[in-house]
Image (cartoon, rainbow, N blue to C red):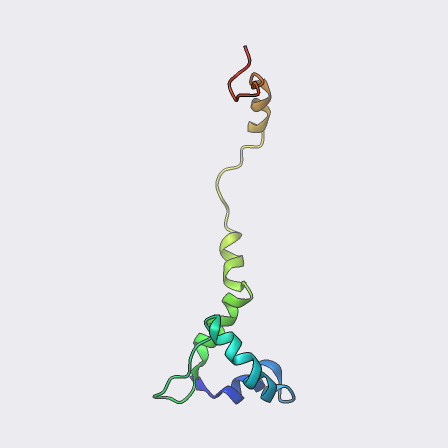
Length: 94
């Protein structure tokens, strides 16, 4: 449930780049809302780290945006052509 920075780094970027990621990237991510170290457990909560990355990459937002927005009315746009043209002040032309 809780992981050290080194464990998270290895899981996210691999063993070769882990030490650089801990030193340089974690401070930047914390400014963007990356979960802080829990002092009682001496690690970062892994479920919150996962949720952070889902939001960071827009994974959760993408699914909500794909929901249907209502009934389709395909012929409705044709009715707009029958309106009188507007004058330059926005009122219907005489």
